[in-house]
Each structure stands twice: as structure tokens, then as C-alpha cells.
Length: 123
Image 1: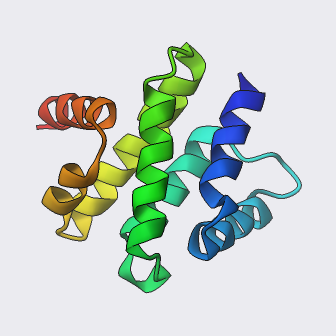
Image 2 (image 1 turned 120 degrees about the vertical axis):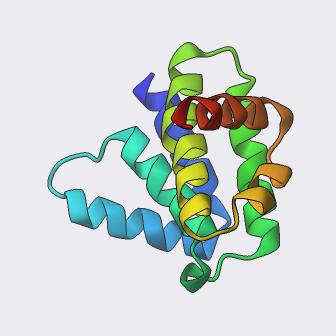
């Protein structure tokens, strides 16, 4: 599980300077311990939403595509990490920044389904 989830984190940061920076900062914060995967995924999701992080539209689109593929993977551990770390973190952060509708519209179908269920539960 950890390997697959760590691969997801690394894939998300691979071609995004904004996400790579956020990942580096999170690892430094947690050092010498290994950060929890869900915490890393929530950090990356928040970075995509935060206007000061300067992530670009292509970076965001790529990240949302990667996460939707993880959500559709059938790997229970990966789906759980992506859902609870990234999707729920993204929804919470987007809501705080007043851009929830924009991000919900950009999610892939599997991710959007989880976000909708989570938001309906959250009330």
C-alpha cells in the first residue's frame, strides 16, 4: 500500500514546480519522520487551490486526472488515500477559498462522485 500511495504523491509532484515545492516543504516539516500519505495528499490538494502557490491550469488538470485514475484503480488502499487525503482536502480548501464550484466541475467522474458524497455528508 505505502509504495503505491507514495508513487501517487511523487507522480502528482513530478511535473509541477508548485506541487514539488509543497511536497518538499511537507517532508521538511515532518522530518525526521515520514509524513502520512493522506497528509501529503491534502497538502498537495491545498496547494492546487491556494492562489499564492501559483499552480497553473495544466498542472491542476494533470493532477486531477492522476487522482481520478487512482480513484478508479480498484486498489482499496490507494482509493482510500486519494479520497480522504486529496479529494476531501481539495474540497475543503476550495470551499475555504470560495472556488468549490470551479474545482468540482474540474474533477473526473470518480473523484466528483466521492466529493459529492463527502460534501453531502459534511452538510
